Length: 143
Image (cartoon, rainbow, N blue to C red; front, side, top):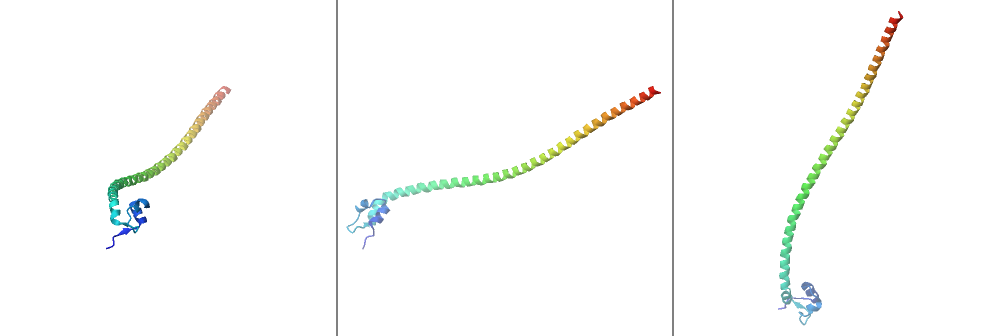
């Protein structure tokens, strides 16, 4: 029965060592038996298995954190959308209030103008009444 083996280059790559270190395990034909590779990498495999378990645990934690971040992201996007809608509504309200304020200002200016006209009219009527009284007095004295 032929024992399974790997070439020197492949064995060095699998074990993660240089070809000169792998050559120490080689048979006279230059190939390295799988049994020797397994014996050499057994402790490495155990370390890799532990590292893989740790990595999977970290991936699980990161996955949970990612879910939380995504949920937070969705909530924040919803809040932003609501804020944009509220800002739009408030902007419309401000524009309506500004228009109403400008209209009120124009009406106040008209009222002031009318008040000025009324005051001028009253002053003119008083002046006219005085003039009429003077004529009456002048007529009385002229007679």
